[in-house]
Length: 180
Image (cartoon, rainbow, N blue to C red; front, side, top):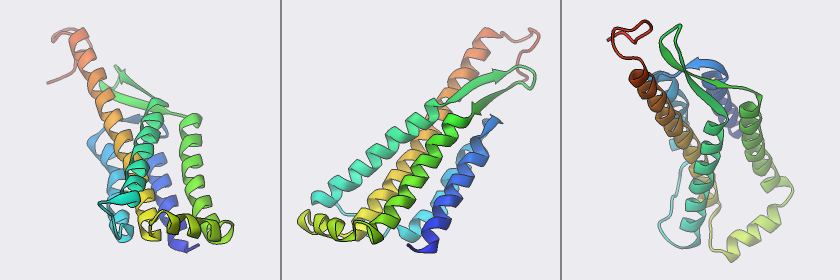
């Protein structure tokens, strides 16, 4: 397995956990950071997305499973209003960390095992389904994109709801009302 596979996966894991672990303010930069890290890395490896056949099905499945994993990750965070600081925050703990570590660990295991454990079987499966190794790699990238984008979208949506609920519950002029 190429060292860059380790570096990329660990960089994305570090960016997500640094952005989300503990109690964190929900800001545009925080939401964009993991997506930006991926945006820099992904184009280097997204090589041959396909628009037909089993390869397309595999890429769509990768994106779909990634979206579901991202929604699961977002569901493991609490989103609430912090009246002391007058802002929306999220809280992510060990279940959130465990999910991300499991996902990144599974990707690293698959990358290793596809070269050392089930290389022949995987090769046969790819040939029998007319899928190239590059398309398989792209499906895994679509999984990662789906997970990051859906996690970010869900967090953004939930933060908006909390912000709106607080604004409705706290009319202007009352103590604790958000400024401007």
